[in-house]
Amino acid sequence: MSLTRSSHHIGRGIVIDLGTGDGRFVSVSARENPETFFIGIDPNTKPLEKPSMKATRNPRKGGLPNAMFIQAAIEDLPDELSGVADELHIHFPWGSLLKAVATGDPAAIAALRRIMKSGALLEIVIGIDPIRDRSEIDRLEIPDLTPVFLHSYLIPKYTSNGFGFLQAETLRSEDWASLPTSWARKLSGNRDRSVVYMTFTAV
Image 1 (cartoon, rainbow, N blue to C red):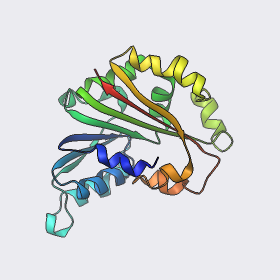
Image 2: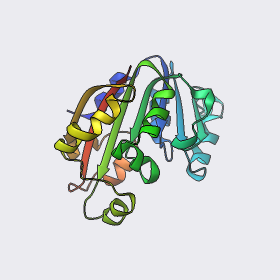
Image 3: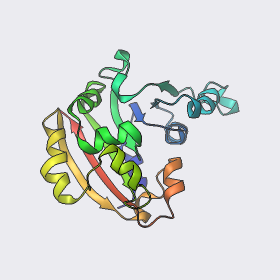
Image 4: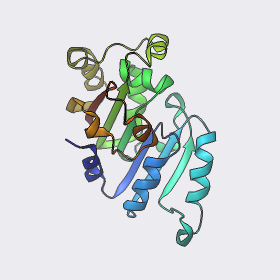
């Protein structure tokens, strides 16, 4: 499997990238899918400044009229986003977003479900290096994302809070390295990083 096929999910409608960072996924995808509207969301305003400015340029000068960026955390997603997303992507989350999606926090899952339409796709890609990321794993109390943990604990958290389960697997580096995010590019040489891929549908 290659995550480049994740772009095949993208159709017309609204796609949200939560934890967008520098917005590369939104910018690349918006350019490749002009009939789809993309929203990048991140709690950190600094990395959003550059892609936001670029998106507002004249389209003939690289502007993206089908993209926008919003400063917000998963804990305070704007009410205006309720029920708008046809797809919601979370790629290589960190900090509070990582803790929320990797531990199955019910309030966080409810927040994700709130901004999605019924039948919308939720795609989550979590990448953790058990050695390099140890201090952050311990700080956030992230469990080992083993198949047993996923299927016996984490996935049921999602299916009990408004989602239907579609798929879960651990990816090889060649499967995720070409995902159009800056983190995928930075981490692509680390073969020790365990990358879990999960998809759900909003019900």
